[in-house]
Length: 218
Image 1 (cartoon, one colour):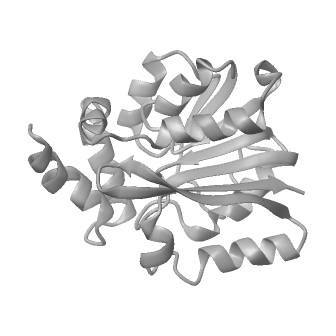
Image 2 (tube, one colour):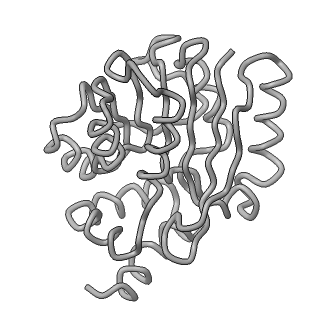
């Protein structure tokens, strides 16, 4: 299938408000077998950018870091990080098809098929992870803006939460505008976490800028 067809039949639908969360999850499962190939066609660089940033925050002892990959998909971020020395990675994604592909890589300690919201996940204790990363999973019908509350709960004090995402949802989508960043600021004022950086980058994927959001849990 050519790039234009992939965009019209899959990516455009995932970015739109026409499908609900469950419908988008099914679309990801249907897409899972060709997902990685298609992302390469669109110059998708969000995982490599996230990996680059995380290596900056963890210049050594990466083999001792316990991390959670939220919205793990087929395991592209785990591939990047494993090649840089990160060894203990759990993954979470609501799409069974995506997780089936991720499991083939044999890079994850555990894989969890679940949505990630502000509600406490029963299989994660408080302070479970040294590091939590989210790549490309904030968008309409994807992870809700207030899921950062649960991210903070399961990340250890001093741990990093890193988001590598398309920039536009945070500034254009009604699901995030006047919600996400105000909540970030409120949680910082409450002493829950501290901002390390918010930077933009070119080439999240073809014709789309990216954003890196990094906070350290207090």
